[in-house]
Image (cartoon, rainbow, N blue to C red; front, side, top):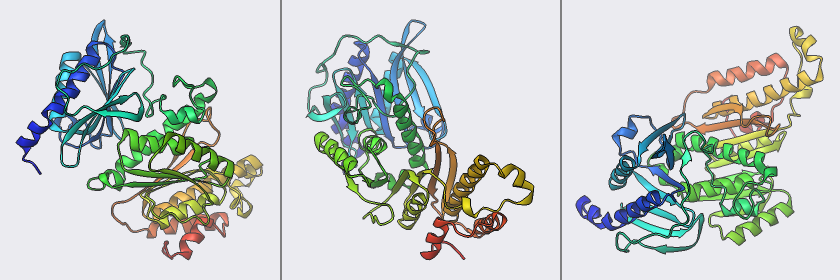
Length: 437
């Protein structure tokens, strides 16, 4: 590996090229967004703001008529915004690039997408391609600094108070058009606005989980990620997580959609072929008998009744780092429930009994995941105005094993109180010896 001084000299042309293109985009008012990802933990000022920085998004704004660059720093539990005058902002970015603070930077303009990337050995390269399309890309690593970039008609600076809400995905990504979420210009169709919000919320939840999981911690943050999405349907979320991991985060990821309906499998396979997507496939199958070769992330959204239990069991058995479920239907426990005498007047109403069965089913699933070594959350995935299937069970594997005796006792007490004899996930885990007696 070259000495640091030699490496700095070797990287100088690429860094100068990227900074020239960035400065030109800002001065010509055609900068759409600058995205910095794969933070390396080398900047003291950033470290002072918090841990686990996921990405930095930079965009032009006008504050009191003066051009600024607005930095949005996204951490697992908070966002921090800083607005800097253009000259100060460009100097700060130049310092970050020189330090190799981020492994990838993506500069977006209406006509080009420029990527600055650092290899594992620290060597910088710059590539320029069409916006949000990697089909035609040309290397400019050796180009002379100062070569002008193509620019379009200037785009006015946005007001600091009228910016679009931050989204994890670019609506101009080709897969969104192929799946009918956007039109040919990359605009979200009005009829798909709820789906668009759901897709972005899903990626937001996954991004936070990835950052705090073993997969997001060094040295595993450079390992390949294997994702399996069961009951993936038309693939909105399947394609989204593939695009976010490979395009935005530049992670080596392989995403597999598993779906029972052959017509949807064929549709998604056609999209994969048309867009020539690497690291993605779609298969026909059922979670009850599907055996993935590798599994780091298990997703099962809207799996009906005990299919959710089979999906969670598969994830635990495979040692998945992240398990994401959005349960649908809760039929197994409801017929077993005994209404304790103080609650009978309330539970005589069918709607209340159904809500209680749902709460108990998902509560027991969360406890069983805790007992199996996961930190688990149950929360509203997206508001009811967008979908009535809005509950998410999110489990992130603990780095160190902890005792589960107390959790197992809680499960036993809850079952005894409500007269529950059988719960599918518990039976599956006990059959495999994955749950203490």
